[in-house]
Image (cartoon, rainbow over all chains, first blue to last red; front, top):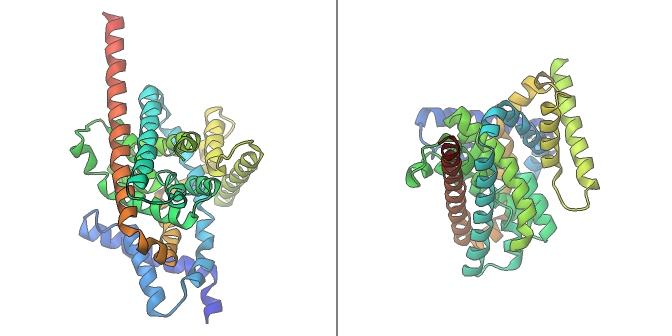
Length: 226
Length: 123
């Protein structure tokens, strides 16, 4: 039985069904708390434990989906290209905004790890967590951290960004859609960007651009904070 | 056939990105290299938008879906997370807020400075 379930078809089918339900619930409830990803994750975990299927079996099958993380990151180039006019007319604000965002994230992570007494391995796993998952994992490995902890943190961060994206501009008095998009993309990578794409075209494009720019800034600057 | 060609182009460019990344003298992730490479090819008209077309749009539209498996994997590391769960939450949420504030306010301030400069130039 477990052999059949470790087939990619099971992992993919279960993930798609969970995602469809997550999207449906999200549309029905119309609240950011009914996040399709959280719902889908909980449904998959619930399904696995209800039928006593080890998570390793699901992972074996769903590794096919993981394979797409790099292409998904790469094709973000298309959203940048489509908004190249908006980028070129906001070149310096976007370049400097992502630089400031990356510095703020790295400094906050370093300082709060010190204050909360988290050791260097944890710091190594958290420093890169603001940027897109493949980049974050690569940086964690470079620093000798725990990639699993990075994945957990990029998801917590992404979810926090996704959930807070509509609220944060009100808190900080941001009305400019470019500033809004750069803020979301800098602090919460593709997971926040999926919300930015829902909010608006400029927000989505700016957020996509900021994923790549903040990933580059973070790759370059993270060694200074380790 | 069209979709298969688009997928082949996307996967091929990802492999080239990984190759370039492995040749770089410093650590720089392959997927980011691939993204920059695709952007470069599009900007120089060596690659047409239609060559990535529907397949790329499919991935972008359903991006959240691809995060379900890593999300589910978290339950394997529950013991580490359990011991530092509130510290993790604090670090993650506080850094999201400071990063958002720094990035978005810098954008606002730099745009204002640019507009002021332009006005002075025209005056």
